[in-house]
Image 1: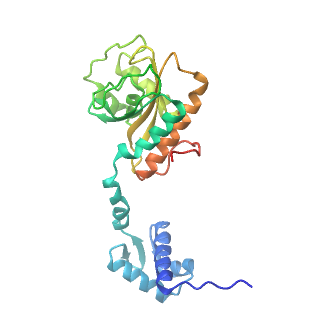
Image 2: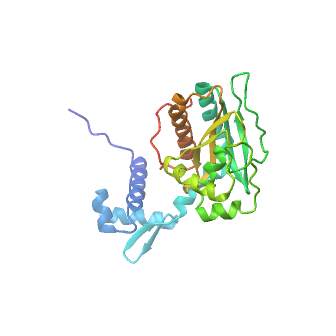
Image 3: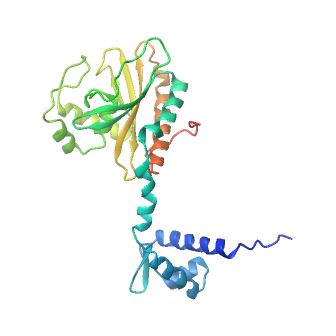
Length: 267
Protein backbone atom coordinates (compact mmCIF):
# COMPACT_ATOMS: atom_id res chain seq x y z
CA UNK A 1 0.00 0.00 0.00
CA UNK A 2 1.32 3.42 -0.95
CA UNK A 3 1.93 5.70 2.03
CA UNK A 4 0.56 9.21 1.88
CA UNK A 5 3.38 11.78 1.86
CA UNK A 6 2.78 14.68 4.24
CA UNK A 7 4.72 17.84 3.46
CA UNK A 8 5.99 20.08 6.25
CA UNK A 9 3.64 23.01 6.86
CA UNK A 10 6.18 25.57 5.60
CA UNK A 11 6.69 23.67 2.34
CA UNK A 12 2.96 23.24 1.88
CA UNK A 13 2.43 26.99 2.35
CA UNK A 14 5.10 27.82 -0.22
CA UNK A 15 3.46 25.47 -2.74
CA UNK A 16 0.09 27.13 -2.14
CA UNK A 17 1.57 30.58 -2.74
CA UNK A 18 3.07 29.45 -6.04
CA UNK A 19 -0.20 27.78 -7.01
CA UNK A 20 -2.01 31.08 -6.41
CA UNK A 21 0.58 32.96 -8.46
CA UNK A 22 0.22 30.46 -11.28
CA UNK A 23 -3.59 30.64 -11.20
CA UNK A 24 -3.62 34.44 -11.20
CA UNK A 25 -1.05 34.44 -13.99
CA UNK A 26 -3.49 32.53 -16.20
CA UNK A 27 -6.34 35.00 -15.68
CA UNK A 28 -6.56 38.76 -15.86
CA UNK A 29 -8.64 38.78 -12.66
CA UNK A 30 -10.03 36.08 -10.42
CA UNK A 31 -12.47 35.93 -7.51
CA UNK A 32 -11.98 34.04 -4.25
CA UNK A 33 -14.62 31.39 -5.03
CA UNK A 34 -13.04 30.55 -8.37
CA UNK A 35 -9.54 30.50 -6.91
CA UNK A 36 -10.48 28.30 -3.97
CA UNK A 37 -12.17 25.79 -6.27
CA UNK A 38 -9.27 25.68 -8.68
CA UNK A 39 -6.73 25.29 -5.89
CA UNK A 40 -8.93 23.01 -3.75
CA UNK A 41 -8.49 25.26 -0.71
CA UNK A 42 -11.06 26.70 1.63
CA UNK A 43 -12.13 30.29 1.00
CA UNK A 44 -10.75 31.32 4.39
CA UNK A 45 -7.27 29.97 3.59
CA UNK A 46 -7.35 31.43 0.10
CA UNK A 47 -8.23 34.87 1.48
CA UNK A 48 -5.46 34.54 4.11
CA UNK A 49 -2.82 33.87 1.45
CA UNK A 50 -4.15 36.58 -0.85
CA UNK A 51 -4.09 39.20 1.91
CA UNK A 52 -0.50 38.28 2.77
CA UNK A 53 0.51 38.53 -0.89
CA UNK A 54 -1.28 41.89 -1.13
CA UNK A 55 0.65 43.21 1.85
CA UNK A 56 3.89 42.22 0.06
CA UNK A 57 2.81 44.00 -3.11
CA UNK A 58 2.48 40.96 -5.41
CA UNK A 59 -1.32 40.93 -5.62
CA UNK A 60 -3.88 43.71 -5.93
CA UNK A 61 -7.65 43.71 -5.36
CA UNK A 62 -10.30 45.41 -7.48
CA UNK A 63 -13.74 45.01 -5.95
CA UNK A 64 -14.08 41.28 -5.29
CA UNK A 65 -11.43 40.19 -7.79
CA UNK A 66 -7.69 39.72 -7.45
CA UNK A 67 -4.85 40.07 -9.96
CA UNK A 68 -1.07 40.10 -10.07
CA UNK A 69 0.92 43.33 -9.90
CA UNK A 70 4.04 44.06 -11.96
CA UNK A 71 6.22 43.49 -8.91
CA UNK A 72 6.58 39.81 -9.81
CA UNK A 73 7.66 40.77 -13.33
CA UNK A 74 10.17 43.24 -11.93
CA UNK A 75 11.56 40.57 -9.63
CA UNK A 76 11.90 38.09 -12.48
CA UNK A 77 13.49 40.63 -14.78
CA UNK A 78 16.04 41.97 -12.28
CA UNK A 79 18.69 39.25 -12.86
CA UNK A 80 18.76 40.25 -16.56
CA UNK A 81 20.37 43.55 -15.57
CA UNK A 82 23.52 41.61 -14.70
CA UNK A 83 23.60 39.47 -17.84
CA UNK A 84 26.63 39.82 -20.11
CA UNK A 85 25.68 38.96 -23.70
CA UNK A 86 29.24 38.09 -24.71
CA UNK A 87 29.59 35.67 -21.79
CA UNK A 88 26.27 34.01 -22.63
CA UNK A 89 27.23 33.68 -26.29
CA UNK A 90 30.78 32.48 -25.79
CA UNK A 91 30.13 28.81 -25.01
CA UNK A 92 27.56 28.62 -27.80
CA UNK A 93 30.05 30.13 -30.24
CA UNK A 94 32.75 27.70 -29.14
CA UNK A 95 30.30 24.83 -29.59
CA UNK A 96 29.49 25.86 -33.18
CA UNK A 97 33.18 26.43 -33.90
CA UNK A 98 34.01 22.90 -32.70
CA UNK A 99 31.39 21.46 -35.06
CA UNK A 100 31.93 23.67 -38.14
CA UNK A 101 35.48 24.95 -37.69
CA UNK A 102 34.74 28.34 -39.25
CA UNK A 103 34.75 31.87 -37.82
CA UNK A 104 31.84 32.73 -35.51
CA UNK A 105 30.83 36.33 -34.81
CA UNK A 106 28.46 38.12 -32.45
CA UNK A 107 27.27 41.54 -33.58
CA UNK A 108 25.00 44.32 -32.26
CA UNK A 109 23.48 47.44 -33.76
CA UNK A 110 25.42 50.68 -33.33
CA UNK A 111 23.76 53.67 -34.95
CA UNK A 112 23.49 53.15 -38.71
CA UNK A 113 25.99 50.29 -38.68
CA UNK A 114 26.85 47.34 -36.45
CA UNK A 115 29.92 46.14 -34.57
CA UNK A 116 31.31 42.73 -33.70
CA UNK A 117 31.48 42.39 -29.92
CA UNK A 118 32.88 38.85 -29.79
CA UNK A 119 34.39 36.32 -32.19
CA UNK A 120 35.88 32.85 -32.43
CA UNK A 121 38.47 32.51 -35.20
CA UNK A 122 38.34 29.70 -37.75
CA UNK A 123 40.39 26.58 -37.11
CA UNK A 124 42.08 26.71 -40.53
CA UNK A 125 45.12 28.49 -41.96
CA UNK A 126 42.95 30.53 -44.32
CA UNK A 127 40.69 32.61 -42.06
CA UNK A 128 38.35 35.58 -42.37
CA UNK A 129 39.56 38.80 -40.77
CA UNK A 130 37.41 41.03 -38.55
CA UNK A 131 38.07 43.58 -35.83
CA UNK A 132 36.09 43.76 -32.60
CA UNK A 133 34.37 47.13 -32.31
CA UNK A 134 35.01 48.31 -35.89
CA UNK A 135 31.82 49.68 -37.52
CA UNK A 136 30.54 47.50 -40.34
CA UNK A 137 27.74 48.21 -42.85
CA UNK A 138 24.26 46.84 -42.31
CA UNK A 139 23.28 46.48 -45.96
CA UNK A 140 26.05 44.12 -47.13
CA UNK A 141 26.52 41.75 -44.17
CA UNK A 142 24.53 38.82 -42.82
CA UNK A 143 24.44 40.14 -39.24
CA UNK A 144 23.57 43.61 -40.51
CA UNK A 145 20.60 42.38 -42.52
CA UNK A 146 19.53 40.20 -39.59
CA UNK A 147 19.46 43.23 -37.31
CA UNK A 148 17.58 45.30 -39.90
CA UNK A 149 14.96 42.58 -40.24
CA UNK A 150 13.83 43.30 -36.69
CA UNK A 151 12.79 46.82 -37.69
CA UNK A 152 9.76 48.00 -39.63
CA UNK A 153 10.44 49.03 -43.24
CA UNK A 154 9.93 52.71 -42.47
CA UNK A 155 12.46 52.47 -39.64
CA UNK A 156 14.95 50.78 -41.97
CA UNK A 157 14.50 53.57 -44.52
CA UNK A 158 14.99 56.23 -41.85
CA UNK A 159 18.09 54.49 -40.49
CA UNK A 160 19.75 54.12 -43.89
CA UNK A 161 18.60 57.32 -45.59
CA UNK A 162 21.88 59.20 -45.08
CA UNK A 163 24.40 56.41 -45.54
CA UNK A 164 26.58 55.97 -48.62
CA UNK A 165 26.02 52.62 -50.29
CA UNK A 166 29.55 51.49 -51.17
CA UNK A 167 29.80 48.83 -53.85
CA UNK A 168 32.17 46.46 -52.01
CA UNK A 169 31.62 43.66 -54.56
CA UNK A 170 29.43 43.09 -57.63
CA UNK A 171 26.87 41.49 -55.26
CA UNK A 172 26.52 44.48 -52.92
CA UNK A 173 23.09 46.11 -52.78
CA UNK A 174 23.05 49.70 -54.03
CA UNK A 175 20.08 51.40 -52.37
CA UNK A 176 17.60 51.21 -49.51
CA UNK A 177 14.82 49.90 -51.75
CA UNK A 178 16.88 46.79 -52.51
CA UNK A 179 17.59 46.33 -48.80
CA UNK A 180 13.92 46.57 -47.85
CA UNK A 181 13.00 44.02 -50.51
CA UNK A 182 15.71 41.65 -49.26
CA UNK A 183 14.40 41.79 -45.68
CA UNK A 184 11.00 40.23 -46.46
CA UNK A 185 12.30 36.64 -46.91
CA UNK A 186 14.68 37.07 -43.97
CA UNK A 187 11.75 37.83 -41.66
CA UNK A 188 9.99 34.65 -42.85
CA UNK A 189 12.96 32.27 -42.67
CA UNK A 190 14.61 33.85 -39.58
CA UNK A 191 18.11 33.75 -40.99
CA UNK A 192 20.11 35.92 -43.37
CA UNK A 193 22.93 35.45 -45.85
CA UNK A 194 25.75 37.50 -47.29
CA UNK A 195 26.91 35.93 -50.53
CA UNK A 196 30.17 37.76 -51.19
CA UNK A 197 28.37 41.07 -50.65
CA UNK A 198 30.84 42.62 -48.22
CA UNK A 199 34.05 40.86 -49.20
CA UNK A 200 34.92 38.77 -52.25
CA UNK A 201 35.36 35.10 -51.43
CA UNK A 202 33.38 35.16 -48.15
CA UNK A 203 29.94 33.64 -47.51
CA UNK A 204 28.12 34.28 -44.26
CA UNK A 205 24.98 33.03 -42.47
CA UNK A 206 23.39 34.73 -39.46
CA UNK A 207 20.51 34.14 -37.02
CA UNK A 208 18.76 36.45 -34.52
CA UNK A 209 19.09 36.78 -30.74
CA UNK A 210 16.04 38.24 -28.95
CA UNK A 211 15.63 40.13 -25.69
CA UNK A 212 12.80 39.30 -23.26
CA UNK A 213 10.42 41.62 -25.14
CA UNK A 214 10.96 39.78 -28.42
CA UNK A 215 13.19 42.42 -30.03
CA UNK A 216 16.19 41.37 -32.11
CA UNK A 217 19.18 42.76 -30.20
CA UNK A 218 22.07 40.82 -31.77
CA UNK A 219 23.03 38.47 -34.54
CA UNK A 220 25.22 35.37 -34.48
CA UNK A 221 27.00 34.35 -37.68
CA UNK A 222 29.20 31.76 -39.36
CA UNK A 223 31.65 33.13 -41.95
CA UNK A 224 33.20 30.80 -44.52
CA UNK A 225 35.66 31.34 -47.40
CA UNK A 226 33.98 30.29 -50.63
CA UNK A 227 36.72 27.74 -51.32
CA UNK A 228 35.57 25.86 -48.20
CA UNK A 229 31.86 26.63 -48.45
CA UNK A 230 29.72 23.52 -48.81
CA UNK A 231 26.09 24.11 -49.77
CA UNK A 232 25.14 20.68 -48.40
CA UNK A 233 26.04 21.89 -44.88
CA UNK A 234 23.98 25.08 -45.11
CA UNK A 235 20.96 23.56 -43.32
CA UNK A 236 23.23 22.23 -40.55
CA UNK A 237 24.82 25.65 -40.07
CA UNK A 238 21.43 27.35 -39.87
CA UNK A 239 20.21 24.77 -37.36
CA UNK A 240 23.31 25.26 -35.22
CA UNK A 241 22.87 29.04 -35.29
CA UNK A 242 19.17 28.82 -34.43
CA UNK A 243 19.86 26.40 -31.58
CA UNK A 244 22.54 28.66 -30.11
CA UNK A 245 20.44 31.80 -30.54
CA UNK A 246 17.40 30.16 -28.98
CA UNK A 247 19.36 29.22 -25.86
CA UNK A 248 20.94 32.66 -25.59
CA UNK A 249 17.54 34.32 -26.07
CA UNK A 250 16.03 32.06 -23.38
CA UNK A 251 18.69 33.20 -20.92
CA UNK A 252 17.71 36.76 -21.77
CA UNK A 253 14.08 35.98 -20.92
CA UNK A 254 12.65 35.19 -24.38
CA UNK A 255 11.08 31.72 -24.65
CA UNK A 256 9.15 31.86 -27.93
CA UNK A 257 11.92 31.43 -30.48
CA UNK A 258 10.23 31.47 -33.90
CA UNK A 259 11.72 28.29 -35.39
CA UNK A 260 12.16 24.68 -34.16
CA UNK A 261 15.76 23.92 -33.22
CA UNK A 262 17.99 20.92 -32.74
CA UNK A 263 18.40 19.38 -29.29
CA UNK A 264 22.21 19.29 -29.19
CA UNK A 265 23.65 22.11 -27.15
CA UNK A 266 26.85 23.53 -25.78
CA UNK A 267 28.10 21.98 -22.55
